[in-house]
Each structure stands twice: as structure tokens, then as C-alpha cells.
Length: 268
Image 1 (cartoon, rainbow, N blue to C red):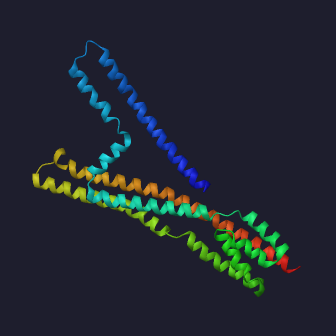
Image 2: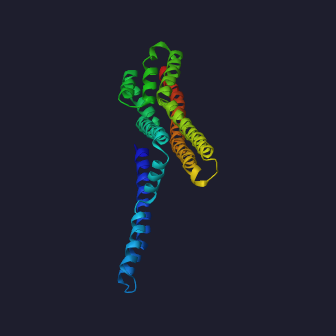
Image 3: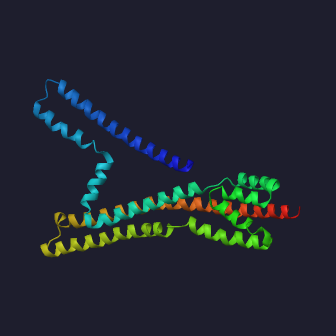
């Protein structure tokens, strides 16, 4: 949960920073309007013409992105937006799942060994049952086969470790698909926009900036937004892979420690 709160805090900081930026941009505009009002040399028509720029700046970057998104065309921007929304939803779900699945393995191993000393393997199983996370589940599967021998315990831990790894990597293929398909949709919009531009040139019979501007705008905007979506999802994807890699190493290391505890207890 600490990692989730950290991410939310970072997002809040960025949002607060953008708000300050907009406020800083609006301050000079307000000062200019005040100075214009106090000056006797400026006419009412001048005040009217200076008011709209201050209103135009209020939207900031969000308004500019929204405007460019609309200019790109709903037919091409809607699939890219779908990739972003669904991809982010899957990323957030994985981050929350992995954060909740994290376990203090050193504390868990210490508790298992202490309870085993007091009440045997059943007490150790109870500790694993009351602890959440894939590591505790792997330990439970191994300890439940303690009577069958250390070799069976080792195979059980290895097999169930693969099952837990598959659960950790759930939905990663879909996130990877959205990372790949979003720039592809952008490039497809680019190709279609270029075709439309050349069709207009052919119809008019002359190369003019006004003729090809519409097609070129669609071509460039779809590519830009597709690449932006891919980069955003790629950052989250790599962060998720880092979490999974850390948990996998933790599972392997703690499984070896568990086998050492079992061997130690079996000799008593």
C-alpha cells in the first residue's frame, strides 16, 4: 500500500504544479488588465480586445490537448483513447494487486520457525494460513506435505511457485498489446491522412497548403497521441515488471530458507 500511496502523492504533486503554472500565467494577464483600466489614455475598445487572451490562457495544457484531440478526428482518436483508458486500468489493477501481495518474508520465516518450535508443523501451517500473499501460499503448500519427505516438499514448492508467478503476471499480455497497438493506430491514421491529402491534391490539380492541411493535421496528430499513449503505458509496464521481478527473487530466496528450516526441524 505504501507504493500505491507514493504514486498517488506524485500524481497530486504534478497536478498541484500544473495548477500553480496556470495561476502564474494568469497573474501577468490580470495585472495587465488592471493597468489598462486605471490608465486614462486607453479606450473601452482596447480593454475589450485585451480580455480574450486572459480567458484563452485559463485552460492551460489540458485545454490544448483536448482541442488537438478533437481536431485529430473521433474515428482515429477514440481507439487510441480506448487503449489508454483500458491499459491504465489494467496497470493500476496490477500495481494494487502486487502491492497487497507483498510480504515481509524475514518476519514470516521467523514466525514459522518459532511456532514450529512451540507447536510443531501444524502451528507453522497456521501461521502461513493467516498470512496473505504468494509467499505464504507457497510455504503452506510445502509444509502441508512435510510428512511425505523433503523431496516432495521441494517439488511442491517449485511447482506452486510457478502457479503464483503466473498469477503475478496476469493481464501483462493485454498491457503489452495496448503498448504495441496504440502507435500502430497512430501510424495507420498517418497513412490514411496522407492518402486523403494526396486525393485532395489530385482533385484540385494543384499543391496548396490549404488543400493538404486537413489531411496532414490528422496524420500528425494521430501519430503523436499514439506515441504518447504507448510511452505512458510503457512506464507503468516496466514498473510492474520491476515489482514482479523483486517478488520472484524474494519467493526463490525465501523458499530456500524454508527448506533449510524443514531440514533443521526434521533432524530434531
